[in-house]
Length: 353
Length: 284
Image 1 (tube, each protein chain N blue to C red):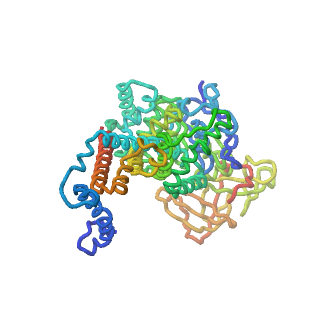
Image 2 (tube, helix red, strand yellow):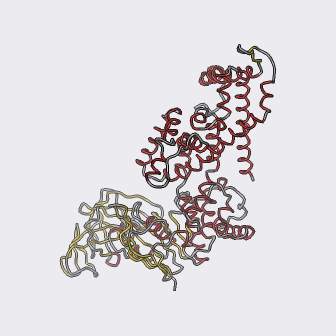
Image 3 (cartoon, one colour):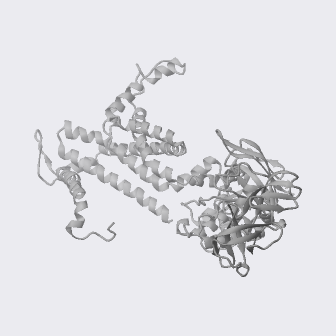
């Protein structure tokens, strides 16, 4: 089984460490998203995989072959750059055929392959157009076709869709995913857009400050975040700091919660997604309920968002419009945290909130 | 911003001054020169108005043909060498940290502030037998005894390239600084070695800049008349030197003017040809 293995990959620029010992195993045919805020080291990690940056430490192995120090042009990985980096002096077809020309493939064959690839990215008939005459979405497709020209083992994309408008980006996400499934090619995409990562990836790698926080399938990252950073970065969440006071009981600001997965003692951090928080009219009794004041409410169409002040902490809840309790901002409310929806995280001292 | 074409005297006013300066300092002198070039020389005197083409006919001798082709060849060689050295240099320069780039640019600008005379004498000293670089080679055991390397064609070429190099870098700098640095990396991920990426992507992507810069250095070198006299032998004297000689020492203004007009026309023709070739390649 062919796989890409990152073993403690590290990159230092002088005193700054951009990537701290990234270790990851990517099975063949996976669609991987490196996700994180800007400056988290995700692009540096991708560039090390591409061979455009020399790692300061660690190893990079593909199919059992160590390629840590192999120059970029010997790796035969296809890469799409954020700026696309299409060659301005060549036509769309010549851009796609560039890697074939470098390898001395006959002209007729170059042309045939370029046409094939344009067909593959659903952009037939533009081979003879200069790249300056193409639209943003068309250039995107040409860049993707060029990166796939050599049928690479690994397909790398650095924020490939960031230059497109929202609607086109959405369409390209789906198309990119379909293309990857059709070709079965191992793909690594760098993105800061969690929605993009969630919708495309088989494996989401969440990074921050040069470290990998979690590498898991999208739903697992969402449902079982490894730590406070992941919980907060992926989607919206409510983070509650608490203290375990008795087995299965945690004191949080405004009351106590009874949860099954608590550690025996000590401080804990709880993550509850807004859509899991249940809003009740004030005064309704039951387990795991806290009382608060509604500070803000807005209709989002399919749902209603509540911002509720519970003992000085703002709790965000999402309800279906029909479940909206009859209350105006300033009024009292009861919020319920169902035990199954509360994810217990290790307390994160460095997490600023 | 006025987007439509300017109308009336008031809206044309901003360009009146530069237009006037262009006429006074360029069009009138150049017309005078063309006029003088068909005047008749009065031996022992100056010249008188006439319409003779004898001055132009003198070019058709082998001597002037030789000087002309030497001048053009020299300028072309200087342009090729300057761009050939300055392009890779500038490509490396724009990748340096900003501070280092500024130090290099200040250094190059300081070379520009040197006068042609100083550059000429500095090079002739550097290449001389008594105080030149060959003494260093002797000291290092590379040469048996010091020798004079100037005046010679090589010395002339070195001086001219040295003089043209800072201009070349400064003209190339903006285009190279604007070039997407990912182009070269993209070429590398597509299978080109760094050297191959440079020649198959960076150079062709900037072809127009390279052509324009080469033309600029070519024209710059064509006008040089001091360095050929300081660093070259008489057979290395360019048409510019002959023009100076005729105008100042032989007092033959009409012939000097005719040569100057001819030089301008030939330069323009060559520049036009180069641009035309560039355009044809682009559409092909």
